[in-house]
Image 1 (cartoon, rainbow, N blue to C red):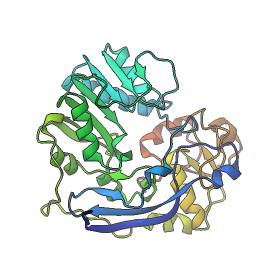
Image 2 (cartoon, rainbow, N blue to C red; image 1 turned 135 degrees about the horizontal axis):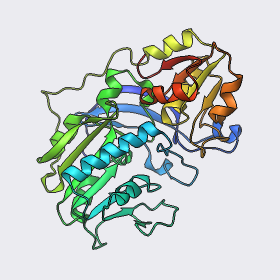
Image 3 (cartoon, rainbow, N blue to C red; image 1 turned 90 degrees about the horizontal axis):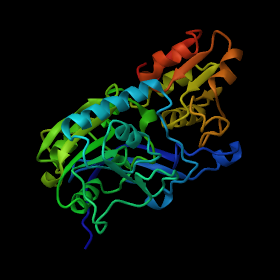
Length: 355
């Protein structure tokens, strides 16, 4: 008999793109992208937050998926910070990165002298350090430390997944986990940071409940991410904590109405990734569409954003023709200084996550 789990609805949206970071070759294909709904709920048994409308059958990553952030100097600084933390608390000997993507972070650790192997079935490169398969039981492969960056938010049952990793790794070992921070989303009413791809939304307290032995835990990348290094042998099922109730903010999308009420024909989104996709979509639905999208990732340039079909351009293709009255909508405030320098501080800049 299936157990009925009580939930509390926090937030909902319909018809969101399944993939924010999949790029399309035409505006028509982008507008006709796969869609899914958002029903963000708090699980009243585990205390975890998830999209109850998530359908894993819709999610199939391929080479058109582009979420590389290391083109930014600011983000590379974050990766350096994470490398330092792993080196300090886990060492660089005998590591495994799970869901290593294109291998950027793995290569950074390897350049520091780490003995590391990556696992990712979607990997398309030729690095001998990366195996194109899932890490799981039966491989006969274990490590002193596991690295799990921006993977767990995509997994329908995160606790069960961590248990699988524990078992596959011989019952223990340390693990570094990095995920988006739901506390940050709530504090800033960051409606543009709710995506279909992210089935889970974590708070620091979630990992304090799941790990009996936490080596270090905190927030990073301007508070937008949270991290934990925990002992996999100390895993325990999370339970709802009446002493730490989730407070979801009123007026969660208030800034959307504010932005839509003062539209400009020269509103330019800088950042054609997840935040920019959702921001542009909900601005369009509010009858206040943005004019263009800029991104420094060459793999995005010349392609089109999911749902809106907006074309992504390089800075040099847009900036010279912009009027001085243009507003640059910086999707991630962590990059604002970098963006101001690249555009010679010539326009009005709005840090969407901080306004």
